[in-house]
Length: 287
Ligand SMILES: [Zn+2]
Image (tube, rainbow, N blue to C red; front, side, top):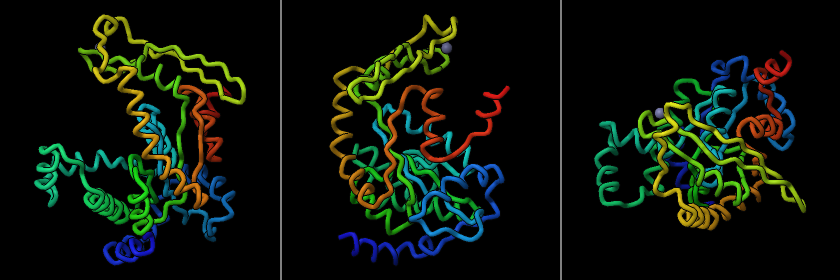
């Protein structure tokens, strides 16, 4: 199955398969920071020029885990785009692109956007990036299924898949604590999470993100942030994502990362797990 998919995709996306990222676009910061990570991955073919290196990563994680936040921070750090397939669909919908009218029909009928359309948009985005000299990408929201992962294999080589994980108890508290200011749209979280690690289970600490006084009286909760909805969302996600995790695990590409807390706790640990350094963190710690 995987072989035949690869063969058909190879023909359709031959330009993608042959692409190489230009080293010229890598900024010096990214060079410094990504070098140790790739140096340790002995299974990957190392290239003679350390700048001639790709970051072709996928981010997995359940809804509410903060996947977009971490993917976006890493993309800034590494100087590669954070590509969320949901954004690609929205951008195409709002454009006069060739798929816009088809997409409008699909969305209006409440149907799911097919794998073929998403991979089509993604391929175009990667090709455009290559033309601009982008040195890689971090994918967010794709692949969601094994079929999508198989198709993606024929389009581009993914080298690392980061799977962000959080205990259900913590995620539930995080989702139930979400608040939005009805006036300015600011996002806050009133949950104060402090789960002690025990019996081999990791602990989790997350401070609340409280609103400024002028927003405090205008907070609202999203109607789908209820325990029932969040639990169901998680169940559906688990069922769908487990085979995808297994797919990448078998290929030796899966990096499991348990979030130890909010951004201040998790960001440095995530960098450590990826063997990256954020010089700004070091500088502020030293100051
Ligand atoms: Zn406000």
